[in-house]
Image 1 (tube, helix red, strand yellow):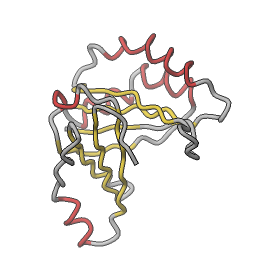
Image 2: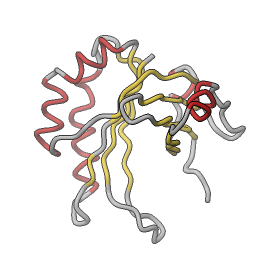
Image 3: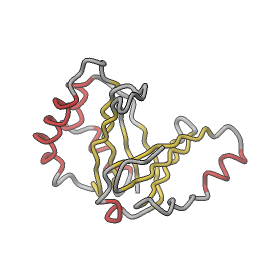
Length: 160
């Protein structure tokens, strides 16, 4: 399984409703995309006074690297980058919860761990189970950036 995510940081004045409307009008384009197992359109915005930038960060699980590459070479991805600008996706093999187990997810948190030595790399290879309150977790090893990206999916937003 391959995980692919890209992120666009948006201007503070950008209307998040416009992003939601775009997703609603374009989501059908992915319905029959070969090799696509699961998708989510993640949005982040300042809530409850948090100093967080606005962003649009779609997340996809594909059967394999060939399916992820086919998507990146498609007119769908070109349309997204034409609308929001060029970006460098996060891509790599993923292990964790099967995609159907996270269908009910309504929020996702991301923890990034830098892999700076062999001990960190070996530790990253041992997948950590999902927290009890989570629907599931996906661990992505991004070899280009030497990072472990851990996505935790929940039915409701995480509480701090």
